[in-house]
Image (tube, rainbow, N blue to C red; front, side):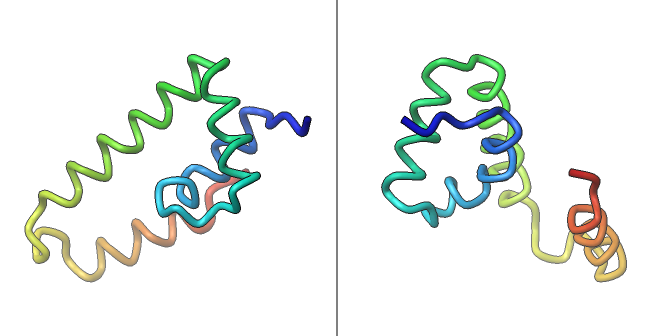
Length: 78
């Protein structure tokens, strides 16, 4: 069995939420969550953050702020 490390779960969380993992990757992800309270809480936080952001009006964030936020996510240290 190919067990995931917490770091890998963090790297794959977006793909998991977007249903972009292969069936084997998704199973490994779910198996890890079943045994790791920290990653389970992390996934819940990401879900709640995404839901809160979806509730914002489209024009709530300026184009400049949006670009800066996306750049921060792209260049964050791994």
